[in-house]
Image 1 (cartoon, rainbow, N blue to C red):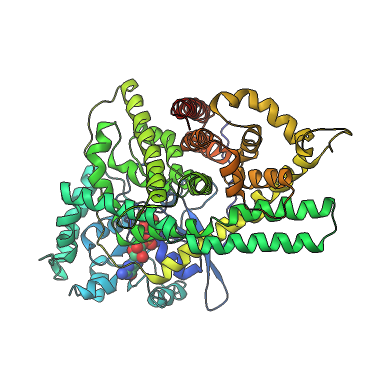
Image 2 (image 1 turned 90 degrees about the vertical axis):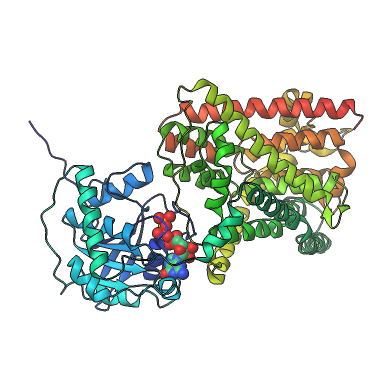
Length: 625
Ligand SMILES: Nc1nc2c(ncn2[C@@H]2O[C@H](COP(=O)(O)OP(=O)(O)OP(=O)(O)O)[C@@H](O)[C@H]2O)c(=O)[nH]1
Ligand SMILES: [Mg+2]
């Protein structure tokens, strides 16, 4: 007997935003729905479907879908497949859209219209939004929207995704959808090649009829690219840009960090002076204030790092960097396509691993996913900053270049180097050793939108503070508990913490970690670090605050005094690989559909971390550190 599954869909009119990558779909989605999805100037920012709602003037709500960009309706990568499935009504738990807003870039109608014709041939009702009209106007491109509408036989509106009122025309049309008669062609099923050829010819005729088929204006972008894409000058610019970012992370952040540190220690002293001696005081001062303060102090550095990342994302420079590095990446078996997923991993490996959906070749995608955790995520920054601050002297090497910034740069670079080495090793195992050519869209450069930049930074602050208030707070409390109980037995000679659960567990773990120079305090702090890497810092702060007995002493001077340089270097080497992040492993499982890859990732990262720390520690000891 044949059974047809019954599907239940959420009710309401469904409107999907569809268009080429980077044409401004998400910018329009944010304007319509008031959401704050990520917008950036490169192709492949959105990799999964996002839903929002738009309230019509009559109070009814439209469900709006933001989708990954696509060049055609024949998907070549997992992110394009998401869009094509939604349009074909094949997405699980989702009906076919009632309306499609086809977003086209006003400065590149040729490609945008090809997709519009493709969607039209599927028989879906369409509204065409010609976006980036401001850029077109600046370039002297005049688009006759009425003529275009007649040629296409579809409603056409103009939009500007970066202006607060840039979606007015579109909103007006959405409010009139009920009265709008959708063009109802029957879906046509044609071979991909035939379809594409006939669409191309049709687009040529349309552009000719609306008098837009000539002259592409000369652009400032081309002039800039002469330098930025030049093999020598371009690489030099890239190296200088990255170097300056890491310098700024240390030199700009020192004043606000000092301030936060002072505030934390003053709060600790003040609270310590008003609370009576005992368990509550220990919990508040050694647990909460020392633990959380120990992590919050790194917020300025995180903000500065993200300021630069957002600046690079918005300007349109990133795909250029990908192109420049394509040859280098090709030599280790990757393509420039992996650049953006890897770069996103500097924020956190999770969005980085998800961004790998834009990679069409499945082997490249898998390798990118496996090496993404080697990029230095922002959760590692507090650990690096703590150790660098404690062990690397604050001195200028030459002309304002700080030694601490150089060390940070070297650590980030070590992660990249390790990732490339692993990719190279994997290339030796693979059968596909051929080189691929990179086809990548280069967007126009534009000045970063200040509002977008501010929103992006604020979101990072929110994410960080949510981590501090959530997982870090929870684990700090757990750590304080483990380090405070049970009490030391009568007649004990050591400090109380040595007899606690944490002390005992730390000493067990230390059997494993002593050969690489970690003491028991580090060994125990690595455990809650499995959930969030910054917790290593808050846990150390709590453990040392409990050991020292002072009120709110800063962690940095304590470890500078108690650890050897060899131990610090070994811990830095460990964190280049930092195998312990459960959420990253869970994401790898989800994206690869099984346990095999996350287990391989965890295994190889752990082995490399141990090996790197062992070598670092032994070499450092032999130099007498
Ligand atoms: N000047 C100008 N810039 C725009 C406009 N709309 C979007 N942008 C910018 O264009 C870039 C791409 O915008 P997104 O909304 O991320 O594009 P998208 O279509 O969602 O891209 P993908 O998710 O990668 O497919 C961003 O830098 C936006 O700030 C516009 O109308 N005018
Ligand atoms: Mg998008």
